[in-house]
Length: 157
Image (tube, rainbow, N blue to C red; front, side, top):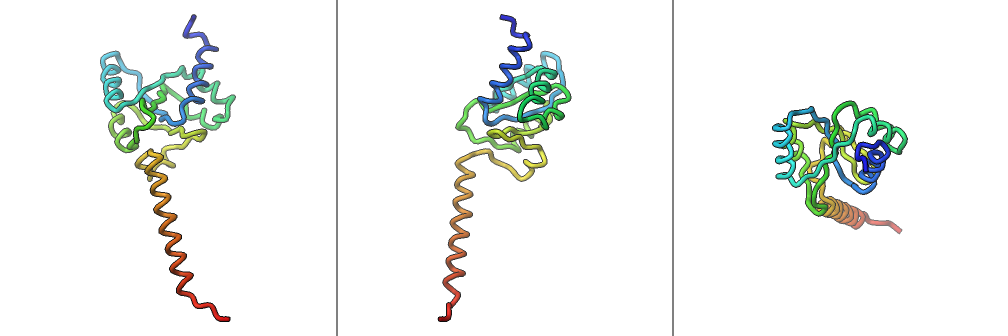
């Protein structure tokens, strides 16, 4: 089987988008083999995997999908980086800082939405459990406050 065949690459890219609910999109510079080995070692230390699609096929596939607005961001050498373990909590600033000499973060795909770097400014952790716990705490506090405020009011009959 020819792995450079265009239809195979398109199917592989579509399957990657469908199967991976969370991954980062990074712009990267083309580097020699020695620098690339160092980059792969850093990715392995951070417990991350990467997928390097072909640029023209990526743009063509994205233009014919629900991500057509995102296709304009693919202008050079692009890597899709995902977590090797699905249960691991990801610290976004730590990942960006560790990969900054090699890559520039473009976006984050979470479920079926793609978020740009400006939308990710205040985000620190990518952990579902922590997010649900934070939401629970906020809701609990709001419910207690509304209960206290309604009890202080005296209703006249």
